[in-house]
Length: 404
Ligand SMILES: [Zn+2]
Image (cartoon, rainbow, N blue to C red; front, side, top):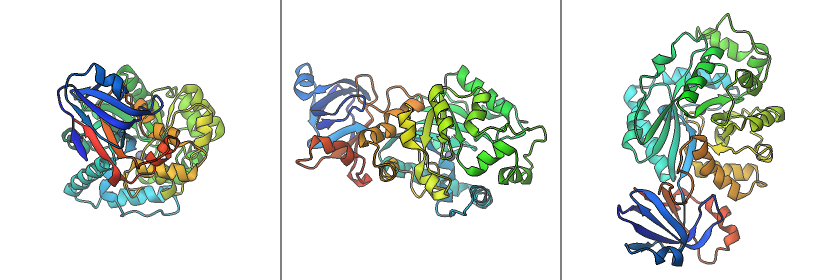
């Protein structure tokens, strides 16, 4: 079921509204005008002041579309071409080698297919990282709202920041930001310069952090497979002195951790690092299916929640995942951490992703929010206390959309 929103004020009634920021509302209704929600509440109340058309969606739950806070569309051509190789750096080397052998038109075609698949999976907002910018025009033509992070890789810090700003967009659908790839692929000065730039424009800042044991080893000692990789690619910098710190402490020393910093992965982050991230109010982005594919470790999600962090979910790319599906990520989180409540998992998949990407009005249902909604049929007799566990375990085929 795919319903385009009427432009005039229209009331939609559903058995459940799942606002995320409040408890679910049974027999609820909302009114939309030109893609925005203007009223939400119990059906009888909302109906009272409404003179326009109304549509009863029936025995369904209405919830906000999912947020994929971290992906790389431009790597979609690598699907099934890489296998876990036992080491993170071997996987990176294979990725670089195979990427070089793929024709340009294949990158575009597979990115288009990946976007289509994400729409089918109920995703409405994306945080997309790219080195080439090939996904920008695809995103612009798509029904998604997106943050496009132009990813910077330059360990020698030779390229001026302005070289990366040529894609700067003024687009209602795409927010353009810069993102350093990781603490081991971008020079310390460039990391700080990018943070200063995103801060100046009040943009989200996102980077891969504490993903692999090799990254931790490199920042602690300056040695290991990552140093060899940098040397092999002519990217080693003789002026670099290993900070002797774990990744999160290193980033904190550079002054780039704050509430607008998205730390992607954290599969190797220690308790002390997570405690510091909580103090800085940084935003973890968990890509659990990618982590398990690469065998780099499992993020300590229950501890993050205990510390008051608000993790969001990402898929990473099809080079380390077989699908770009937040439903699959939620199901995997649920399997790994049955102690985390389905309500929190759904929050990670919606509101906390939108907040991390600094997209106001996304990821929840309330007056003023975007009407980018999922329609999920609810079986008769489903007890309300089972609603969240039902919602996070649905196959994509069950979902309809209400958008426009
Ligand atoms: Zn990534």
